[in-house]
Image (cartoon, rainbow, N blue to C red):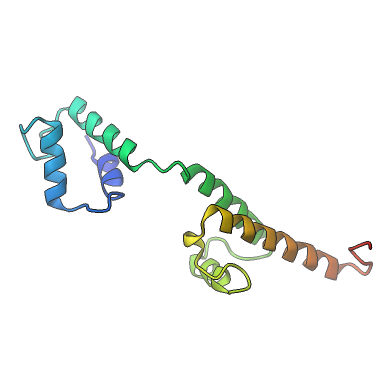
Amino acid sequence: MTYKRFYKLFNRLPLHDDEMKERLVQQYTNGRTSSLRAMSTAEYDALCDALERSTADPQHELRKKKRSAALRLMQQLGIDTTDWPRINAFCRDRRIAGKEFGALTPPELDALALKLRAIHLLKRCHRKSSPCFKV
């Protein structure tokens, strides 16, 4: 059995040290052991399920979707979206977002997407000889 699931969830907890891990394991084995290796599969699954419930982030999927949309727009502007320092430098500009990409909230990601679409539109307009906006 691998313990990847446990450690992924455990590291999301605000306090995650060896003592905390041992206490959690003892709690889900009824004090039988403090070792992950000595846990039964059912005990391990119960512990991981409880950790998933306690660390669940209802905004996670929404944030993931908005980040993906913003990265796609950045790609269309020619920004290398595999270069995280470059993405963060771009987003830190006060005219763009004023903070690193990973720290943006869903409303800030919406504002970023709006700015990126405006930049994309302006770039497209400057390439054409005819005006883009009709008044």
